[in-house]
Image (cartoon, rainbow, N blue to C red):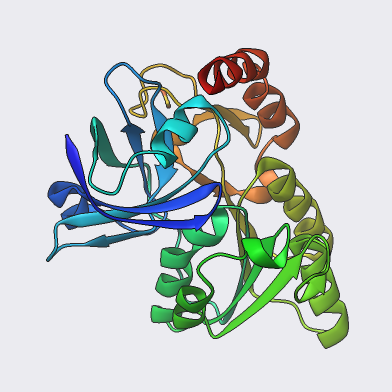
Length: 274
Ligand code: FES
């Protein structure tokens, strides 16, 4: 069991957990993830690490309620525990010193981009985070983003705060207005957003990495559930990713594969709510 040290409800659907996991806290690097089972026998869900503290022996994750198991995870009480946590898994993010790095983040990706933005800044880059939310009240971790990036620009779908639109449109707007493009871009968030970001950055000629989130089961390269086609080759996101060159990922296939169990996921969630 992994004891919860701190729980912070960020929005009605999203919660931050600091969890006891000393061995993961000692070894994790930005861009890596863990697999959590909130209860014995529950589905295993992959979650990108948001932080890790060696001294406290804790890791931090942010979970959004989108299906049965994530709903159970978000509902875990502050004085509770997760049944098990496995990690750190996957390869760390490609952190290089290139000049100006723009990081696009949407949904819980806004939390997951924190350690990557921090690492790029520590490597000597000028970092700009383009953070997206559906509406002003759902903007999460605003202070934390300001602490790790040189600039943070918000976009909201309904225009209630910052740029009206999504982060991909914001990137296009920023590049057009300034006449300058970043040396590198990193994108993390929902698949449709990463797919749109990959297309836009390819058109703009910006090298881009995407942290992809396919279906995952064991997280150790054994089951093949996380197959992603990258530059025409099958790659296992759990051991070779989760980060790949965004312009080489077959997002059409990735979208199809992540929807493969949608019906069962909806049924399980509805049954759980009853
Ligand atoms: Fe099973 Fe990657 S999750 S091989």
